[in-house]
Length: 70
Image 1 (cartoon, rainbow, N blue to C red):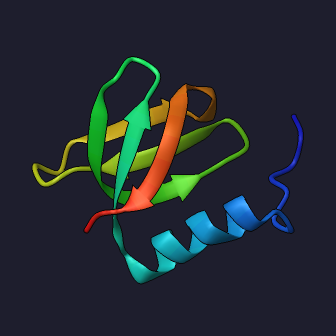
Image 2: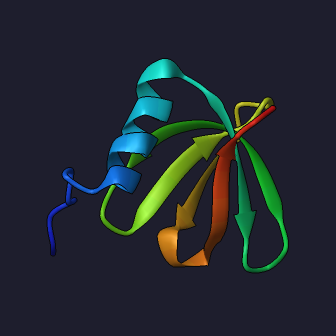
Image 3: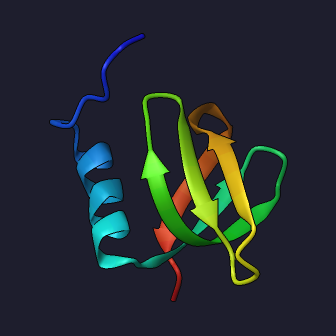
């Protein structure tokens, strides 16, 4: 299993979202929009928890974009 490349700006940015507990929007290739806080990331997935404390694990390949919730 490859290691998480922490020198990449995208990985560092997601780590900042996690540390600052920012709410984000994830747009998926299925056209779904997931809103919540990122709990963790690994090489293949991101785990996000929504307002109902429902956790969702999302494959990185399925993300179209991620941005802080305005």
